[in-house]
Length: 163
Image (tube, rainbow, N blue to C red; front, side, top):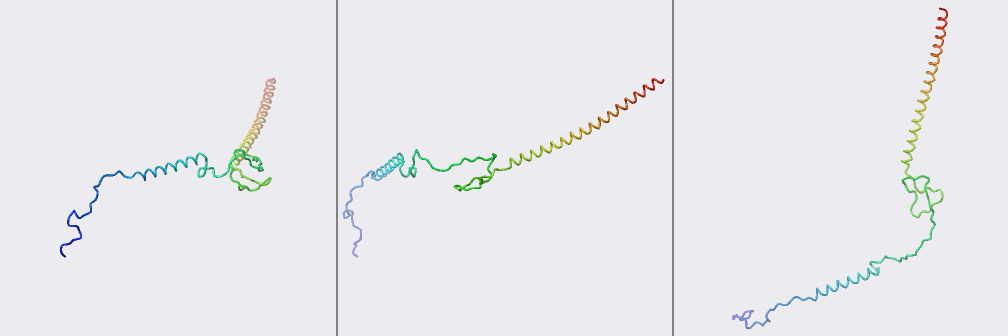
């Protein structure tokens, strides 16, 4: 080992590199990304303007379409809130089938109110009949009192005439 090393002995033996100078960063990648985003936005605007896929209605449409079907108007015999629907969608029904059940609570309350009114009227009738019977008894009593007073008057006149 005679003093040889892996490194050069002097800086003269090293390869020469050009002096380092500042260079601005490359702008090609951001410019390309910006142009791609702008192209995508333009394509999406065009698709949206003409209602093409992904912004389309998803199927055919028309302004003058019509549907053939049998439509029947139904109406309840009484009004009220629906408590239960007894048919399913698109189920065939026939005349007389029960389609919905109307909540009977409001009608039940009306029946109970009417029954209370009937009971009150019956009580008033009983009171009036009792009052009539009492008045008839009082009338009989007063007629008897009148007859008694008339008899007393007749006796008093006879006693007066005798004296």
